[in-house]
Image 1 (tube, rainbow, N blue to C red):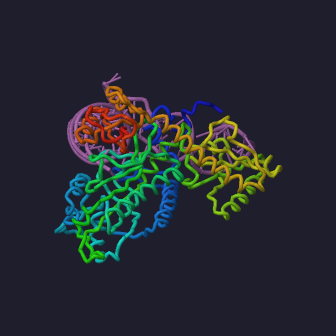
Image 2 (image 1 turned 45 degrees about the vertical axis):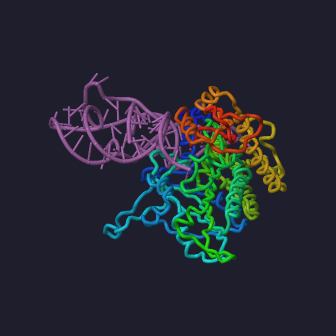
Image 3 (image 1 turned 90 degrees about the vertical axis):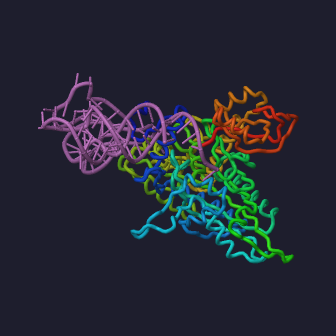
Length: 485
RNA sequence: CGGGACGUAGCUCAGCUUGGUAGAGCGCUUGCUUUGGGAGCAAGAAGUCGCAGGUUCAAAUCCUGUCGUCCCGACCA
């Protein structure tokens, strides 16, 4: 009954006081991950993998709906291939892991463990493409990649991580640009409707661009500490990779031309954004569409009266037949303990069922997105209406999490015109700082040196501001500026 | 990679200053009573003190190295 959660076994520090400590604790205690015996790597446990599977299922359906197919390319990349595109090598060289020995012998050529697959896929595309009739190629790969990171955090930055990388090749520049923007749109819609994350999207500045890309677009979510989290990227690679890998085709006019390629990716980092953006002091709050468990039954036993357990299993079986992801927690723990446990693990809806409910033919639905004491948080419903009411509650939780995150983002987008105010705000990590900007790398470098913030995404100038807030040169674009993960 | 802190039972930590045969709470196991917001009583199991060297009659404790974690910075699609 004690209100002080000091010695409780699965307690986590309040999110509001220490975001970092909360984040790590909740990832571990909600059983999303465990640290692995290798530095900088994590084990994705069943509950965490369930999140990934739901993300995969939703994104994959969107890729298929936009004409893409899945394929798989090798983990290892010969060194000679990796060095073909100059900017690309330079960008990734510091974080590539190398295989130097195999079968007990030193290799004549080192093999890179892929940090991304542009070069392998580019090589294959050069073999597959001869005619304009072979284009476009629209392929996606679900894979793991390795990047030798110095500082790692669960989901946000690990040495090995899961992601998807789409790679397409097109006959024309315009078509490639359309593809790039189309997939950015898919990511934005997925973030909004599945992850319940409001994001800012748009092109990146030159210094934030993917190595070898002509243009990089990203979606950016805002975390509670005022730092931005890049949650998905879409790159227009122009002809840079097709020239390097000789992806050439004979066009309808008989001329041999280089294809235009794109690549786009979302990693499990998106899950980090979901965890941080939606969680509260009591733990995770998982958007229903991503939740491995949409609802958990907590049967309440009284004396010898164990009917609630049987009833919970019956109801759960019915819901499962309808394709719903539900679980019955019939472990020998007190109901209160289970409430706290499943709230910490972020299950969107809890279904309480005790002797009173069994007698009345009802259950109690409790929403995870609302605070204790709020009017709509819990309500008793008839078992006959369970599926319908549960689906309705899940929709409400999904929308409510988005609305809360949207309000949090909107409250932290600040438009600033004064130079000193800008640098102060950037240093204080107030959120997404909206400024008129000159679009010069030197200016961005200065901002970064002064306050560790960079431009996140750009958009066209509007209004009558014509001077860069950071340096006073003529403004070319508007930029959202923030520190980033 | 630079600066700082930490590593002792599954978890959170005490013990280290002043070297002398390993401690607590929670969790875990068993039994009984409980169960609508983190249950109670009783009994029990559990740690080569991160790892490797060194000093010493003796090291959780002192020294060196190493691995890992966290914080701040740098770096990072």
